[in-house]
Image (cartoon, rainbow, N blue to C red; front, side, top):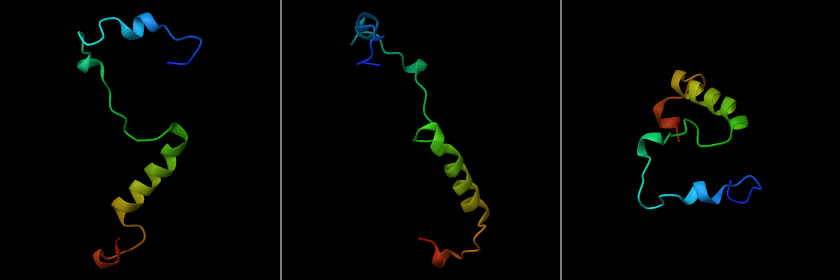
Length: 60
């Protein structure tokens, strides 16, 4: 948290440009904050099961 009162600039910048923690990197499953996840999961399930009964020519 760069502008937080709990920000530790020394830790954030130590070895900057020298150490790359690629193995410590994670990818987000949903590209949003947590309260958006349930509707996204529901929409994905609806699309996968074709709950609306759409035929390919109707999908956009």
